[in-house]
Image 1 (tube, rainbow, N blue to C red):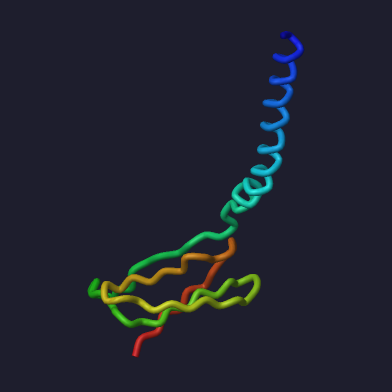
Image 2 (image 1 turned 180 degrees about the vertical axis):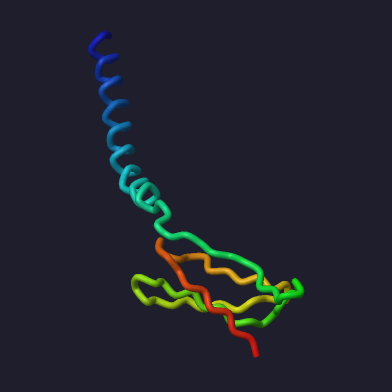
Length: 95
């Protein structure tokens, strides 16, 4: 009886280890998927605090020179959802 109980316990342990080994590789990408980017969002207004829709906004990483472009929506909001860490120069142009 003891031997049967011991075999059952070993079987359960073996099943647990096999299932853990099958699931573990799928958890690594989630752990490694920590955010390495940030975002930038703002509202473009003029000197009278009037919203400027349709303005072209360019964010340039000053260290790498990489540019990202956005355009303000009808509420004057622009967004850069994925920027690498660093210092950025924002240029806003309207027509």
